[in-house]
Amino acid sequence: MALLPILRYPDPRLHTVAKPVAQVDDDIRRLVEDMAETMYEAPGVGLAATQVNVHRRVVVIDVSEDKSSLMALINPEILERAGEQVCEEGCLSVPGVYEKVKRAERVRVRALDAKGETVEFEAEGLLAVCVQHEIDHLDGKVFIEYLSQLKLGRIKSKLAKQARITA
Image 1: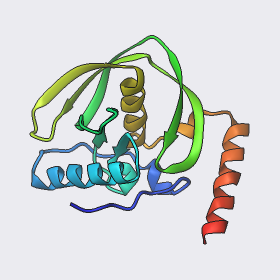
Image 2: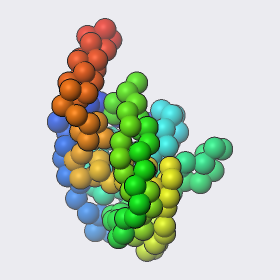
Image 3: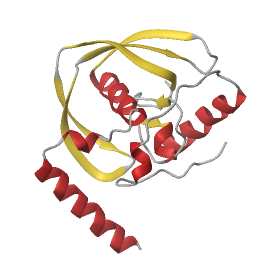
Image 4: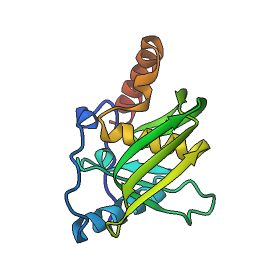
């Protein structure tokens, strides 16, 4: 397994729409393992392949307290959305930024797992938020793009300042 570099907003590669995975093979399983290791090390609760500059529809998620419930979602799709919730979100590609975003409260999801088998499940609360957030990455969208232009401008300024300090 290997730690992968995480792209940072406003890297234009974060806006690349990921391509579907044709077959779950050893390369995809290795990607899932590397993404999981990267997510846990960061630390985070979700990571999309787009964030590590691999433009395939692969997501890893683990919202458990003890990091014991890793989910690999390959070619995930949201079948149904219900309700509405506003949650504070953060992102490994936008470090240090946390903002409230409106999302569906519950989602029904279909995906392939790391074995290539179809899984279907309902998610609510933090898991629902995480699934929607990571699928957005696969579609080339970063969570802060849901915010007002004023907030987005402030965040871009903050990130530019951070980049100058670390450079």
